[in-house]
Each structure stands twice: as C-alpha cells, then as structure tokens.
Length: 275
Ligand SMILES: NC(=O)c1ccc[n+]([C@@H]2O[C@H](COP(=O)([O-])OP(=O)(O)OC[C@H]3O[C@@H](n4cnc5c(N)ncnc54)[C@H](OP(=O)(O)O)[C@@H]3O)[C@@H](O)[C@H]2O)c1
Image (tube, rainbow, N blue to C red; front, side, top):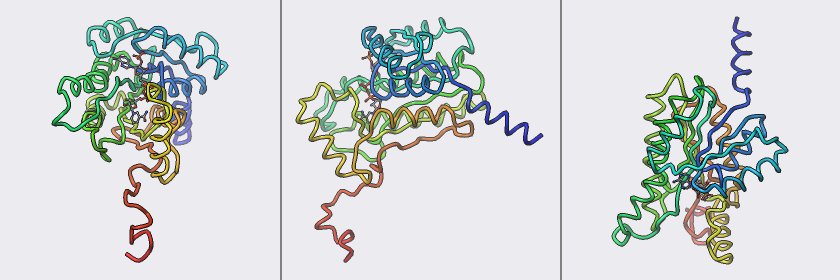
C-alpha cells in the first residue's frame, strides 16, 4: 500500500503542469513559463501588452522547441479587478493547475518624506493588488492539487535606502502568501519566491553603463559573486509549483543577498580574523 501511495505521489509531482503566468511576457515570468513548457507543460502568458506577449510566445517556442499548443497569451491589465474576473470567467474549470504572478510596474525610488504617495500606491497596485485580484478570481478555477506562486523580493527583509515602496509591497505579498496557504489549503498550495537582483528586461530603460555598474556592484557584494539570471528564478518558481509538500513558504533565491556583508572587508576586524 505504502509503495502504491509513494508511486502516486511521485507521479503527481511529475505530471506536466498547465500554468497561468501573470507577468509572463518578460523577465522571471517568461523564464518560469519556459520552465513549465520545457518540462512538457503548457503556459498561458498574461500581461498588458499584446506585442510583448507575442514576442515572448515566439521566444519560448523557439528556445524550447515546443509547438504552438504549448503557449497561449491573454492581454489583461491585472490592476483592474473586473478585467481579471472576466479573464478567470473565460477559463474552463480545472484546465490549469498552476498560477504564477510576477507582474510589477516600474518602482518609485526615494526617501518616504519626498516620494509622492500616489507613486507608492501605484507600486502596491501593480505588484500587490494584481496578485490579490488573480488569487481571488483564478484560484477557484484551478484544478485540485494545484498551486499559486507569487514573486516578492529581497528588499522586504534586507531593505535598501530609497526602496520603501518595494520593501513594503514585498512584505505585503509575503503576508498574503501565508494567509492564502491557510485559506486555500488543502486544495491548493500557496508559496512565494523572493528574488535578489536579477538581470531582466526590467532594467532595459537604464543607461547601459549605469546598468552594468549597478549589476557589477551588486554581484561583488554577494557570496555567489553574480546577480541572478531569469532562468535561476524560472527554475525556483517551477520547483515551488511542483513541490507537493511545500506551502506557505517564502523561498529566497538571491545569491546569498540575505547574508551579504556590508563593511569594507579590508577594514572589518572580523573578516581580518582579529575581531
Ligand atoms: N529583476 C530584479 O532584480 C528583481 C529583484 C527582486 C524582485 N523582483 C520582482 O520580481 C518580479 C518580476 O520582475 P522582472 O524583473 O521579471 O520584471 P519585468 O521583466 O519588468 O516583467 C514584469 C512583467 O509584469 C507585466 N506587468 C506589469 N504590470 C502589469 C499589469 N498591471 N497587469 C499584467 N501584467 C503586468 C509586464 O508586462 P506588460 O508590460 O506587458 O504588462 C511584464 O511581463 C517583479 O515583481 C519584481 O518586483 C525583481
């Protein structure tokens, strides 16, 4: 009997998944979609821009060798609850077993005293309320045994100066993850991936030299001496969607950002060994 149960558990974990990826037209969401497709699954990419979605779909099919049936797209602005509700109403119940939400707009940076509150609210709108809307409306149509995976970020528990909007938004998402794991269990699992710095299209608007300096500076501070690649995040999201006994967790995928040292190594007595 135990052998049979173990076999069923293993078979379930390996079943190719059908994933809805909100934020799937770029960066980590696109990388997660590739991972589902590479593993024999299906990805429905969701974001606002039909052009970006089409380009991402073509890239995923080209890179994975998958056929046209493996990737679909839907243009939805997830800040708008009515649009998300209409999108979810168009999904056949049980036709998807994974929801990933990695959507976020541009983040405002600056001291709280100087930031426009409307910009900080906009961050919550594009990253937190999008996740809330998707969980509320898409969860009921996910198949039993499915999962939700949110994407938060290192700035919650290891904040940086001038990054309060992202820090607060990421913290709210972590709280939502734990609450939903209780609300939706045992039917669905709910987890959150917390990435560190990752070289995605998110930074494409930056001046090339400034972007390279920012990435190099972060890489030098990390135990792994590099920033993340989208594929690192895609693999972690796929893991969370597949791990049948994991729910309510926040998985840090940050190259060791959580344990990085800030003091100058040359003047830090602890690291010179004489502290
Ligand atoms: N990159 C990093 O270093 C880093 C570090 C820590 C945490 N994070 C977090 O990780 C997540 C993914 O980041 P990324 O670098 O992959 O970002 P990205 O490349 O900018 O991708 C963001 C995605 O969200 C979609 N999106 C934005 N607003 C939307 C909305 N209202 N409705 C639906 N889709 C929307 C975008 O497509 P459209 O423009 O077509 O809507 C795009 O597909 C974000 O939450 C980000 O805050 C990133």
